Length: 197
Image (tube, rainbow, N blue to C red; front, side, top):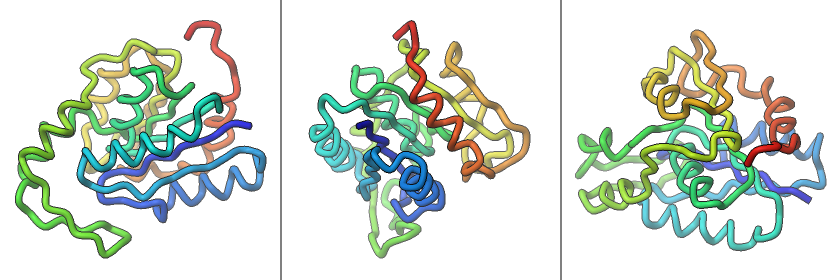
């Protein structure tokens, strides 16, 4: 048995389109696989604890990550620490603590729930502590970005994940248009064993 841990983006939810289509695809095509997509707090310290709790129950289980936006940042944090087997990053955030400064002190609402957050400078420091300046475990990653991402500059991710498998699609959006069509190849990437780890 294997497990897919889908990590949603900032102010997002397991109800997001990509999370839902991933859950459905796995249920139909890999029914023996586990699927986990926890509802994460937008406070970094709480989010990390929530993810660590999920992962603590998957010790010994081949675990594959799909991380969208800020979820890709969290995924990299774990993969570079030897947690998890492989990861697909969808329009991932790179050094988000450097971009969130203008959000400090603002009321921020989750896109899918009634939860309201207000980030502090301490929260940004917590986020920064999870940063991985460079990645070393290149064979474990597949970066998927679209050039018309309206939220993040895809070039930052292309640069950071040099040496990793990459898909750079022209057009698209931050949501990553057409994601569902890539699920068979994503799961195939997870299932193929790398000779170099």
